[in-house]
Image (cartoon, rainbow, N blue to C red; front, side):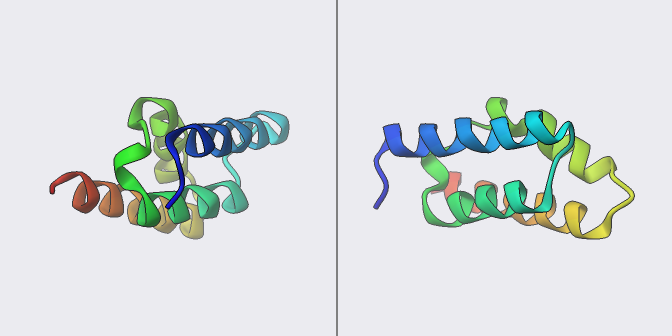
Length: 80
């Protein structure tokens, strides 16, 4: 299992990907989806919420689907 520091580093790098691309990317969302599935309790929604919102509002269906999957995984993972 990934430690909290490693998860934080991955999230920080993913946010950097979004910032460099000046958009929420499918690849970045896929990274967050893996974290949401593998260690949802270690993800801070306040760090990624704006990017999820952007993906949900996007006209790209694949981005919205990834965002929905992340939200679903987080809700199940943090319900325990």
